[in-house]
Length: 467
Figure 1 (cartoon, one colour):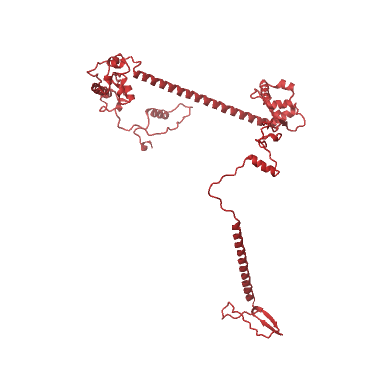
Figure 2 (cartoon, helix red, strand yellow):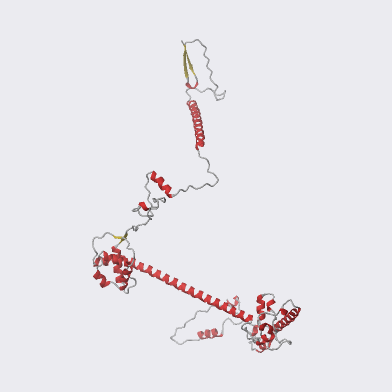
């Protein structure tokens, strides 16, 4: 039996043994280092460290490759199990009936309670009733079970003492508080009759008149407080009741202000409504006068007898006849001439018409361009004397070239001559006061100096003069 022992690089030793005749050949691959680099000795620690690092790196690469392969397989398997994407088309919402939901819950032994109805009548609740049974009685909800209200008797007795200590009385004791203090015997009936005011009894009577008595429970207490204990409770809670009254007064003031504003608004709306009614009534009166129903102008009736005789005109006076066109053209020219004469400074009546009235409006207002203009054409116009010339501004401010009528008045007015020099820095009164201050005063009287007055720019002054 042959045995072979081989010593390789990096301290590797190989021992082989075989019983068969053969030839053994061992080939070592060339190292990564350069051929010129000397071979590493087995005792070199740096060579051992590099080899170990290379082996660890190869192992890490193998492990990472395995992990990545497993993850890819898992992702591929998971993608097969994922649900499909939601449909972009809108689908119907599954909204089952409440009865169906309750039946499904009952099959799963789940108790169902409708909180809209008391638990005392589950057989009559709408959820459990069947519409198929005609013998089912109509549902009648019993009286609701109200939660108990907690009443603090110590707070109530402090309110009792605080209200009775007020002089004069402003607010009554709350009816609920007074009733419950009497029920708890914290306040006896003889004491109530001796100390309570009429407003307190009325408040309690109003509370007792309520149709439903609300359930209540009092806080735990051991004994009824004595007179000294009541005073101590009142001293501790007085500031709270003072603030409570302040809040009540603020609320009353706000309500009074709102009532006042509402009343003023109603009055303003009433005034606006009356003004609109008066305006509508005035417009109606004007329209009646335009229609000729209440007109008193005899001259206008004399000029238009065919209109005053009736509301409808004869057929021969319509706008389709040439006679009407000629008459209408002549009257329109006369009216235009009268308007020009009326605008002039010296109004003069038309020579073709009497002097008592102005030119006559057109005789056919029914065929005018617009209805409003036809109504205005029916009204008689009168010449009113122009008011006398008035010059509200000072006459010296008018230019005689532009206002020839006021030239004589402007020239006759006495005006002070125009001064071209600069006015003094102080007035005559200020100068006299300064002279008096310079004069000697009587002995024994201290001299008082007045504070200088502020100088301001006036007409003709400059900043240099003031400085």
